[in-house]
Image (cartoon, rainbow, N blue to C red; front, side, top):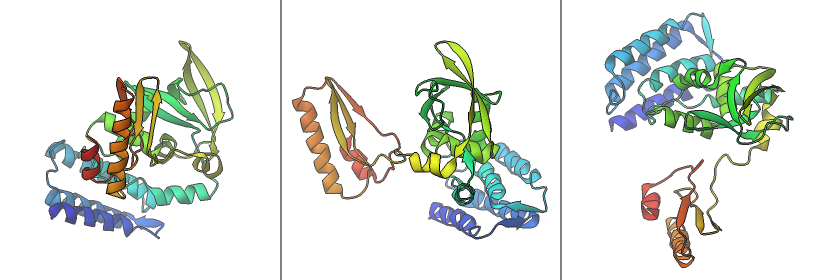
Length: 288
């Protein structure tokens, strides 16, 4: 019950912002204090992954950032995210500032042109929306505008709630690096990117792309909901789709898939859960 109350209050505090553009310094301070009190009083175990001292320190640090007489919705959301993320709990969060972002892209805003994936502490190109064909999928990104990729992720992490860096990186991949880069660093017209090509560091200057036409409208893999079974020699590839919807249909697909995998005597099975939208445990438990 306490968790339900917590989710409800946080949701209300954010949805009450919808339709507003600016908030007074006093109002933001009051709402930040309310958020702090709600987290302390209603969270099931607020200090499971952080300490009370760190939480109090984060609250004071965020409070000192409220200096202007009025703040935008984006600025306010960014402040609140910094407080919830200090809990290091993936279920204690404030969503990506979608309303601010949509307003931005509808006003011909631009974004960083590369999608990124993380592996073993390094960042690699996953999608290239720029017009530079030399930047190919799989190349390692070393820095952006002189900032090492490690420093860039460290500056993005305070706005993402998760138990450890691995999960924060997964959320950056899921919700999109260009979006988070805009949220933290703002609009830029171009970027100087250092990329490792055959063990040499090459520098590329690329223009930002139109966020709506050249980025959002070109994305085709936001959610992987289609169920699929295919083979690469003796390796079976299974994408179970979302763990929601018609449970009987899901179970029938899983039964059929594993029957086929057994018949083909596959030695290896890859289960692809990238960008999976999640759902009910009864689905995933049945597959396992």
